[in-house]
Image (cartoon, rainbow, N blue to C red):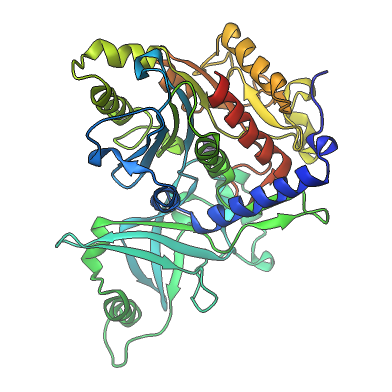
Length: 456
Ligand code: MN
Ligand code: MN
């Protein structure tokens, strides 16, 4: 079989590079826990490297380094190639939203001597995994006067943290009879937020004291929650995992591991024959819908803008040709083989941690329902690129047939009639507060993405 453990390949010098790239990624993962944080981190990084916002451009030339941002939640980064855009571009698309718990619009209430925040989970989480762990709040509160307040509470050593409590085992006998899906339900995911009452004999004195603190520290009124986007995420930094430090444990590898390696691949590949692009998108975990999801027309709008900078006789056919001639890797994570849960995997068609970048010709559920079944001609082209560049790669399905399934943004981009295949990094404990990846897979994905954008 073609699958090989990537760790076997590395000499000492290469191993150093794997570890260095992992450190860079850990920094990204530790500081980017929302879509907006991913976008602003990316903008900071690329502006230092001379990338220009396409809004400031008058013309477009080979070698130009440009980017566009959509509503602070998506970013497209391009290095303009020698060929015209209408020949097609090479895209790495990944999502920067991750499963989490969002704060409701009217969240603050007092219940029996506690102030609580009412929450609504986002994406496919296993709810019982999110109780009794340390949580932080990241996000924005938008004031009526247009001010956007960035909020991060719980990451600094001196910050307080938050928690969703759980029942003690001594009193849990009845609850533990429930199924895993029901043992913690959606409305049980409320955050413990405070417990000191305001001095005096007021009603809801604990809630009032919290409101007083919010006003003093952040200039926030209760009504401001209505126009807020506050995400409850696990606190703390990504860490090395295992005595050999071969893996990384952290929140949000799905899909920030592919987002970061895709972005870095575009930056490090430099100018190529075709224009290269990293497309980092929101809302994948809830169906890729809305203005900032992959279904949005924003991506094609950006391409149209670039094409019109390259041609003063822009027409719609040019955009359609560009999209149709484009090659894309839908960079998303795969379910890595977990020896603790052997029964859900079919070993010959599963990815293993440490064996490199993983291609899913199709995802979907049951009879491949909802999948983007990549063209075998395209798969042949991609595997040649991987082999020619000595990239460790493997292929995978999402578990055994009929056990479950899932999807990515691949089929959406396929609607433009472009060639797309899913390619990413194997993950253990996907969608859990702490997910696991292998540093070797991260590095092979990064090298594989560079090889793809240079040669596709
Ligand atoms: Mn994903
Ligand atoms: Mn996911």
